[in-house]
Structure formats: C-alpha cells, structure tokens
Length: 614
Image (cartoon, rainbow, N blue to C red; front, side, top):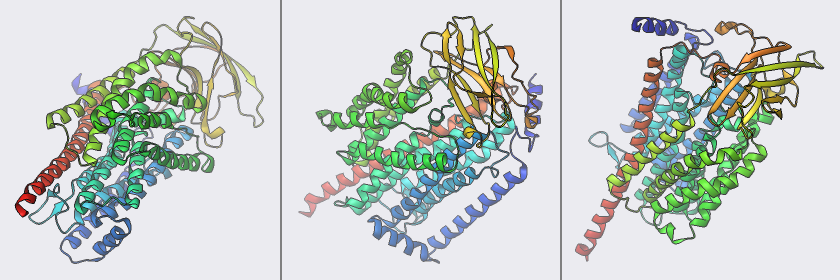
C-alpha cells in the first residue's frame, strides 16, 4: 500500500505541463533563471558596496535619507518597500479576480497579474537586503553582527526573511500543484506562504523604522516621519486583511463564521498598535490609508480591467472602538488596553462593521451565526490585541513584560487563532441528501443557454430557517460574460424548496452549482460543469429535470484538485508549510524582543554614566 502511494505521488510529479498538475517546465526554468540573475546581481552590488568599490548606492541612500529625515539604511529600503506593497497588492487582487472570472491559468508566466506579484515580492526581498548591506557602521545597539566589521539592522534581516519566505512560495506552489492538482482557493498552503510573507513584512518595516529612530536619538519625530508611520500601520492592516479576500469577492470556500473572526484579528493587532504608537486619531488614520489603497486597487481591477468586483471591510467600527477606549486610563497599560480593545472590537466593532457587510457583501452575516462568531472572535481579538500592545511597547521604547510573559502571550495567540481556525474549518457533508432540480429555458439575445431553476432538497428539513447561504454560484465563465461571476441568493418557497431569482448560465465555460451552508453543514450540488480536457473531465450537462446528490463543495469548486493523493502526503506537506510559518512568526517576535532589550540596556547605561560625568 505504501509503495502504491509513492508511485501515485511520483506519477503526479511526472505530469509536467498538464493543466491540472503544474506549469510547463520551460516556464519554471524561466522564472528560476530570472531569480538567479536578480540574486546574483544583488549579491554583486552588495559586495561592491561593502568593499567601497562603488559609491552610487551610498550616495543615493543618503539623498533619500535627507529627504525622508531617516538614516540611509532605513530611508531607501522603506521607499522601495512602499512601491513593493502597492505593486504586490494590485497583482494579488487582480490574480484572484482572474481566477474567479476565467479559471485557472497554464503557469506562472501565463497570467499578467503574476508579474506584478513577482516584481513586488522581489522588491520586498531587495528592500530587506539593502537594509542589510547599506550601513557601513553599526546601525544601532540591536544590530546583528554578520562579520567582524559588518552589522545589519534586525528589521532589515526580518524584512529580507519575509521576502524570501514569500518568494519560496512561488516555486513551491508549482510543486504543490504537481502533487495535489490545482487547488483553486486562496487558502492553499503555498498561497498562504505568498501572502503571509508579504503581510507579516509590515511588522519588519515598523521594527526597521524604530531602529532608525533609535539611531537618530531623541527629537527625531518630525511630521514627514509620522505620516510615513501612519502609512506603515495602514499597510499592516492591508497585509492582514488579505486573508479574507475570498469573502470580499463572494466565493469563499470556507464557513462564513471565519469572516468576522479574520476582520477582528486584523483590526485588533494593527489598530491597537497604531493608536498606542502614534497617539490620537492614529487608528482612524491607518484605516483611511488602507481604504485609499484598497479602493484604488479595487477600482483598477474591477471597473478598469473588467474583472469581478471585490468589496472589503471598512474597519471603521473597530477603529472607533479603539479610539474611544484610548480615552480611558486603560491606555496607560498597553497589553491590558490591547486585551480590552480586542474584546470591544470583537463585539461592538463587529456589530458596527456588520452594517457595511450586510449592505454590500455577497454574503451578509446572519443572526444565527453570531453566537459561534463571538465565541471564536472574542478570544482571537483579545490575544491579537495583546500582541498589538506588545508591538506598540517596542515601537514606543517602553520595556516589555518579562520575556517568558511576552513569549507566552505570542504562543497563546498562535494557539488561540489555530483553535478558532480549526473550529471554522470543521464542516459536515450530509449523507443521503439530494436535490431535485427542474430547469426552465429563458430567452437569450446571443443564443447562449440561460435557465431558471426550481430546487427541492431532500430531506426537506436539511436546511434551517436562517442558513448562512443557499445560493446558486456560476463562475469562471469568462470576463466578457458578466465578468465571469454570478451569485444568486435563492428564494425560499417552503421547507427545502427554493428557486432562482435571475437567469443562470449553463453553457460555455461556466461552472454552475448550488451552494448550501447552514451551521457546520457545507455542501454543494453541481448543476452544470463543462468538459475540461486539461484535467480529463467530461461534461456534466444541465438536464431539464435531474436529481443530483448533495456532495462536498471541494469536489465541485476545486474540480482540478486531485483528491486521490495519499492523505499522509497532503498532511506532511501542510505541516512543513505550517512549521515554516511558525518559524517566521517566532523570528519576528524574537527580533522585536531583541530591539527592545538592547534599547533598554542602552538607556540604562546612559543613565548610569550620567552621575559619573557629573
């Protein structure tokens, strides 16, 4: 049996170039060669700069430092990073929309959005590398020693690590597809590496900026610097808000209860840290910057490029909660303030946010979901808020709690988020359930096949009175056809009896299915699936009258995925990605602790020297 499993995995790896099993090797080789060239050039420039055989890099960084009122090893990397996050965010949102509207692509070079992502991630890695190679002298007390005379700022090392982690996700994504097929979901493990590395890099940028302030000494806080720090916290909010992007488009492949939890988690960390670090109005300023960038990207991808529209959380409710609680004495105790603010965000903040979600999102938050949502969101937001308090403690130059306490809080946050995610990912697929579907032909100006559907689910009590959704999804129909995405919330006629409210496409490349989510029940009924020679799939026709089983959504939404791979292999691969992610989180936590520890030591040494000088 084990030998058969290995042969199965090996045959999948051999499917080079198959549409469901990874890109053509020439594309992978091309990307690898480009990566090698960029890396070699970067190393060569670094060697020339460190040996002082070139001066233009130092001259450029110094000029940027004067304009931005920062040390050169902070200014140039930060400027480069700003373009990085915007470029990568645009490419990421565009990429998701293209997959929703058109389906899979044949490789990393066949999708125009991938170029923006690759360039953005390369710039992220280059920005971190520049912060490492630029300083000739020791850049502050927390700097890491690389050679006898070469020291690098902690924030720069962490930024480069985040960029490298995200870049590694690109070739690993192709390996993943060769093993497991095309998992058309944002939450594929290697996809999470890409967005996780980019999202967490914002913490590294904030730490690098703080190291620059430490190096400049007291009185370094001037207006341009503070504005850039508002942008950095807004960027952190953007980085953390990419995880629920499937919910933004209305094609979430996971339970709806995860959506408010993810919103609360992002708001608690970013907005608590922003308010403590930058003072009054900082939470609202960070939200304003995040909305500006996300809004511009959404307009560029949707109305301009003609891809599916996406909405996004406003975070205004959580920001108001943070600002109001900051007026209380709790504000003087960052970690406690973070905990209370997190609880407020997960309750009042989410309630305020729900008005926006209910108004514009494809799937509003039903009343029946709120109990479980609060049970998941409150502990996650409380612990994330406490981590926001720890981050702000470092960025404001105050002593952290004892190392064991700080590390314990980070570990508790990881475990709490993991437990909540585990609960949110737990689903059940009903057995012996089916749907009787009757289609009526509708007129179509272009002659395509459009239908209305009458649906009777058995057993009739399978779906409750207030489910998360009972909808008809048609997607991947091509950007020329209603942007390739249609979500129709079915009208309830009676127990187990539903009907469509708009014309439904059952032709061309459209994939049409009925979706059901009610509590832990999450399932689908395929209505029409086109033939797909690239993965050896035959057409599932939309018949005038048909009875089809209720099945797991993953078998329909992720049709290209290979579910015959041994479960141990998928588990092992997922655990490797999880371990790498935990290492990155641990590195960021260690870096923040090191910076704080060295700052406190330096301050104590300065105080100790002052009496001797007197």
